[in-house]
Length: 398
Image 1 (cartoon, rainbow, N blue to C red):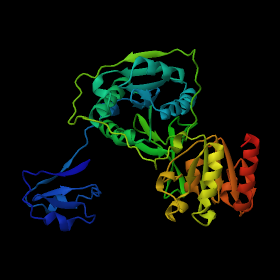
Image 2 (tube, one colour):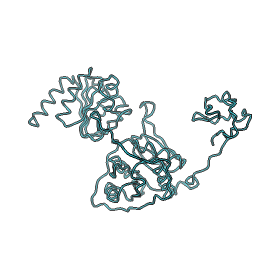
Image 3 (cartoon, rainbow, N blue to C red):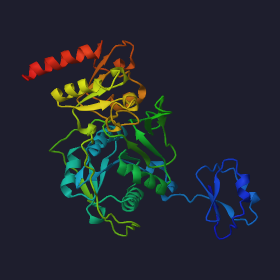
């Protein structure tokens, strides 16, 4: 149920504005408009002298007329860039395999705009089936075409769970898909589990500034949809001998209001690809000064790593935002993560706690970072890091 204003009847008299306790009505081009703050209190319905404000019943999605038991399977949207699947797709197949095994169902990938060779790669990464559309209209990302085709496929094949990466591409069009299907969507998940009793998907993500971890359910609608932060989940197992089914789908009748003319890649010396780094040396407010990052850069150089930072260090202006790790920065999963002078606020832990090895250096033995650290060193980082750098150089013969 929702409320709309019929523009052909509205006189723009503004009588309805005073009746709304939520400031959900405004005037645009001489016509009243109901915005997203509407709480369906219906106070405006009775005051309109032109009867221009009306209540509309929701039209059920075709997927809502079916019993939940008709929906089966776990789907992963496999994002491609330049014809190559992004690494987040392999991470989603890893968690997708875990979920599908618990539900004893198939794991499928959906790939638009790439070739059969990339579909084969997705099978080797764990997919049982790949729904592939090679039409050139999908080679470049477009909200209209991507959301239109994925919605069509979901309505036809009825998966129970649909996952996508929390990337700029998926953040742009996956909400459109959920809206078309009139189902729920949880964004930026950091963990996914299956409820043992109900078999519903538990979509876990930070909430209230990272102060709590919320477990969100979508018990009454299908599919259950979630986007997952890159580098949070471990990649699936790559098996060169694995076989599966490639299902070619058509892009016929797709309508797009826009056309991608060109794609320009940003080139900057300041661009930091923390997502791909095997070693990250990160600093926080405990460095005490911007000069501390010079020491971290020296350690990163001998380790062949990248520089990261907590939000506190970025807020101090010691290092650009592109280096920030955490809930409001980047989520990373390197082989080794050095946390130097970082206390370990939950907002930061969310972005790095899945690293293979975490080495924490902090003066405070009670710092929360030690609760997730593989190795913890209590002491002055300005004394510890030079010794560590010296030992690494000796080991490497530098």
